[in-house]
Amino acid sequence: MMGAKATNRPSFPNKAIRPALSSPYTVPMCGRYRLARKKEILAETFDVDIDNDVEWKPRYNVAPGQDVPVLRQDVAQPLRSLSLLRWGLIPPWSRDAKTGYKMINARAETVANTPAFRDPFRSRRCLILADAFYEWAKEGKQKCPFCFSMADDSIFAFAGIWDRWRNPDEVWIETCSIITTLANTLLSGIHDRMPVIMKREHYDLWLDPGFKKTDDLLDLLKPFPAAAMRHHRVSTHVNSAKNDDPACGEEYVPKLLF
Image (cartoon, rainbow, N blue to C red):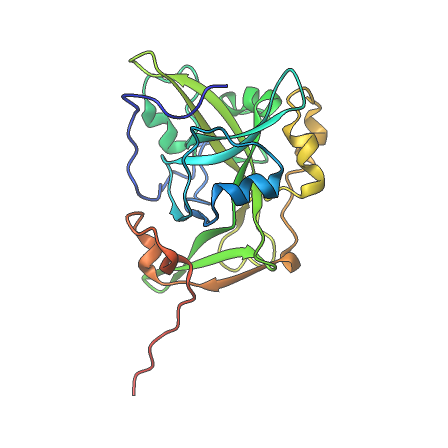
């Protein structure tokens, strides 16, 4: 299985992507998330062996264009592995890596028919691991960030798709995209969409590359129950992808003026 590491890899800017609403490939949602767990914890939680060349340390502000832990299943046998893929799907026919700027997310409503996502949805599905994600609410002229996580602070997984792209230097790069759906009641006051958080009982079906019943797969792409989640406001420290420390997810407490 090919890893995400490569020489002369295409570069992405370390900042949130602001895509155009009119494109079927773009969704202004889920542009930052957190996975502040060591790889040993990931291996134990998802009962999977991690490749020795996977270098992962706790991350508090994961941004598009960076390598992220992804769980996949082998095509020939029910064997799963965790590896690093570049966040921002680049279709095989792309001329350069810039296409990935527009494809960090895929809409659940169109993922089965959009040309760049159609084949990955049928046979290259994955789980993208996380323990929180960020979203911004507009308050006046400012955008205030919020952190969303599970109510029990457990690790979860976004529904994802992945693909391979060969760059001009003939190096294969593996990339992925997070699928989004309509927001649940916890998020609806901040954004009208949310990333698809896959329920554990659906992992087997979603990861099985041999399962290709489109309607059954689309039925899995539902908003996660709001009652099982929580959220809190965080400071604008998280706005810059250069900041990658625990402060990104800490609850924001406004200073009182006397």
